[in-house]
Image 1 (cartoon, rainbow, N blue to C red):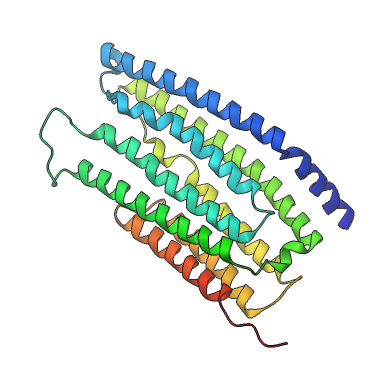
Image 2: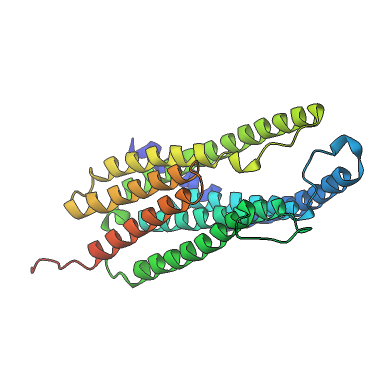
Length: 290
């Protein structure tokens, strides 16, 4: 067993070397640029070709496309960070959810009709307001979380156990595979729905439904798996409560992805606040005298 874990650990280190991560980053950025230009061209056709007349015509919609590639890269970093620290892993989840919220703004702003006067009763304008306020609150909460993490003088003892770190590297490799499979599957399904929409002259499918719900569902079970395995190496009430709170946060974030606004943001705020408060209490508890 130890030999297998060592081989997976070595494979992980080779796969996610800084040089390769940089190559992936540049590739994704080039794809984002290409997709941005392609989307602008598609919108141009939609505005000038009768065949596409029922499609969205706002050029602002194209901003959503490159941002989706950047978001995918952030999710990839989320997977890569699993072996480092559970606390950093949760912090990266905060970042991903915040970026998903910010991306919603770029999607929703194209639904506004700039040809008429706006009012607070406009549902599209309200949606934009929710996106902006929520993203600012999430940014602040993420900064508070990282500040608490950096100020904490208590290292996670379990991260020094080589065998457990190797198990987390193995799970990280598995999550990378799942990430790419889900991405390809979701993109294929969306493109198929887009093709049908073009053939039937209907509005194209909402890209907000692409893949993140399924991915966060998988992460919940990964969190539970790592929680149980961690008890084999270090067992304490505070560790159980802290890691359990992280699982609860992941579940709330997953629920938020399919909820309606503003409920979706209420779930996110509860998840953020719960993890931050637990992290603060656990890391500021008094240790028993030696």
